[in-house]
Image 1 (tube, each protein chain N blue to C red):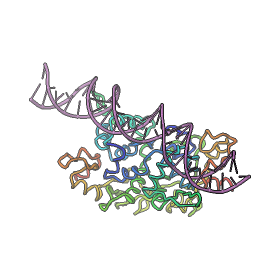
Image 2: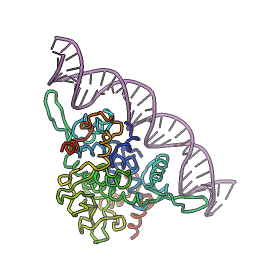
Image 3: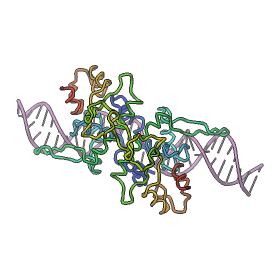
Length: 183
Length: 183
DNA sequence: TTTAGTGGGTTCCGTTTTGAAACTAACACT
DNA sequence: AGTGTTAGTTTCAAAACGGAACCCACTAAA
């Protein structure tokens, strides 16, 4: 399977990665969240080649993560701004950065810290449950087959459309999901 | 700048991506969180080539995200398990999947849902402040220069070590950080 | 006791993707 | 007329990738 086909999987992570999973893309978005908007600024801050940057920015615009907004005529110049969909990636960036800080920092500590203006404190992001507010950790969370995957399974496929309907689904699915099917 | 050098940046996101930012790697981890542990299972579920899978698994083991545990002798066989460092990526996977569900789903809805056993409800992950518990959103969070970046700036570098000390730092940094320096 | 099958790789080779550098276009400034 | 800025496009060699074939150490079946 080619990387460009991963968005065919019935999986939100695969679909998300098909948009933001390319090299440089999440770093471009990191800078976008820090206020960078123009081609040359992205290029300087990232150290990415012009060619690659053009390609990535275009893909993000195509996928409505960024939008091109004209900021001058003559010569026409556009800047790249986060859309609502793009702003919604804030959590991904924060979570990834927090992991990096916790596991990849040297003695000097965190490169960047965050102040939560709601309470005024320096804060770290914590994942909590939308229903009860308590932390969501690996041991307290169990995945379940959702409607979209159930529909795909009923149609005879696994996470991948190309799995034929007569195939034994169970070895195309991860253990936790197989367990769910057995119940 | 080559992709393999991004871990030189004084940035947690860059460092995190230097470990988990390669193609397939986050999908491997997705399956690991769903209970997959063996080479052949990863390969079947992901559709990735053996060559690539070998390489990615080795890199994850090198970086202590996975560990190899022998599960039989004769012939010796090993399985790949999430370490503490790997388990700590749970938030990244959840957040990314949640974004994918919100922005990349078709009518069928979520491929996978999560039950929070602490409260028993189906739940979505919400990012909240470690200090006050309220939501952390783009408008309520401001980045600040942390100790590690401050140290790099004092030494004359930007996020990139190769920036010489006499360079004008301000155009090597994103706008929000420049604003902080000005204050 | 050959034969087939399984798990976990390695090798090879043609195709894609990438990075660096050079080049272009459309202007503004001096 | 000459120089600079922004935002690209082109070109080309190097690196990464995907798929298929091959390999090795076993086990189980015929």
